[in-house]
Image (cartoon, rainbow, N blue to C red; front, top):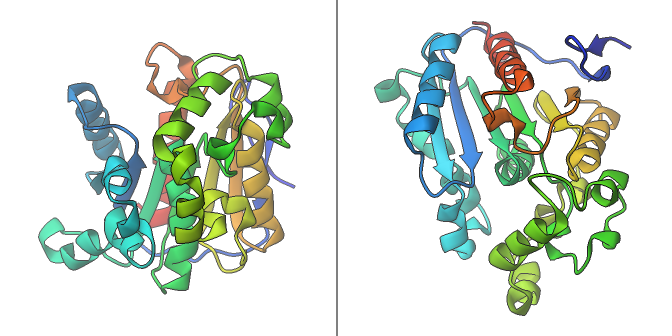
Length: 273
């Protein structure tokens, strides 16, 4: 089994049980995130990413658009919220190939991307690549206590840096208030809360799952990658050693720059650039 590893990184296996067809073309990258807005630093970051990729189109969708109107995220509207139609319908204006689209996200945004990956397949929307970083894949936001998680990393790092259990619990109360949880569970498919419970694991797009070693979400993200492989899909999994949940935003960390270059290489390969 081939390995995907840089200097001092975890030797995570490349799980390639499927075959992906790569065609050339200008790509569009849809990124989901949890920020209220993109400030100057993030705009500069995406501008640099575009330059490294050869000036592709990058569309950013804040998650609060979904949070503000959860009903809109219930059925086919989820695809509207994600930005798919905006990119597809404005392809000529944006100068992009609507058949050459990737999606990506970090943390909660990655969770959305996992859901969209399945929905895109179900709606015959072709994707080149799904890049999910430090992704949740369970319904941990609804836990009463961290011990409900079946994943060792969730227990090991419940008092860890950046994303301790108390912060996860805060986000859970914000996104899924206990008094509305029953209503939300009746509104949404069960696997939207936990992509690991998705009913169909076949014919999904190529996926690049990246995890951080010192992150409570590490093991569930890697479990999602393993389920993709078991379903016959092509997936690359990489764990960044010594890194907390938000390392990709910490410019002083060497791993952040490695993470950026890994993203550039993966997108270039996926889109034939």
